[in-house]
Length: 159
Length: 74
Image 1 (cartoon, chains in turn brown, red):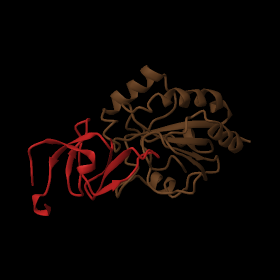
Image 2 (image 1 turned 90 degrees about the vertical axis):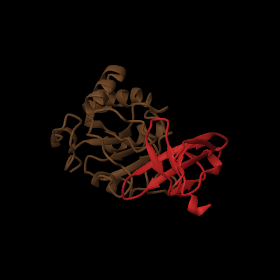
Image 3 (image 1 turned 90 degrees about the horizontal axis):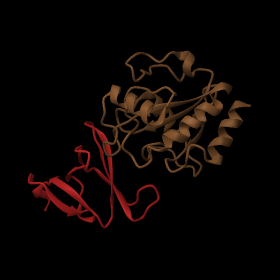
Image 4 (image 1 turned 120 degrees about the horizontal axis):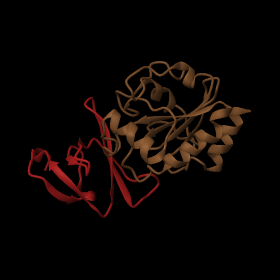
């Protein structure tokens, strides 16, 4: 369900088995942002909860100050070389605006903890999808991947 | 439309202005957010058009590169 219509950074369709039936933390990522070091926390979440049926899904996006300008190969190499990221990445997507991807049509309808839905605010906004495919939480970019709020939400959906 | 790039204060930017981000990307401002990520000392310039959706934040007391302005609205 989550994987439907998603193309990976390698240009191939994402295998549904990689995402469906798992808790998925969808994060729009960028390589040249002040928040880019959040990759470290995202990878630690992947290592800690991956075996329990969780995955991070990175979504490269260049809509925020042009901070993800690279080619798919450059993005993939940056993530794996600089941060050792082992979680899947999609192709570069639009997360806001009239041409936003269908996945983000669904995600941005969900409010954050303050009740605010709508546009993705900046790089590294996080949405948690339950194994049943329901969008259960939204965390704004300043919320670190290993914040207690995020950890608590992940553990609740994995119970 | 003014085409010579000039540096202007972020607070002088108007709807319709064409800006260039540090990345080299360009946008035509269709919306100005009065804060950015909860910071009242920052603004965010947004283009939300058929061509693109693009956001560029700036310090309220900082400068931005203006690359086009419709003089007809002066």
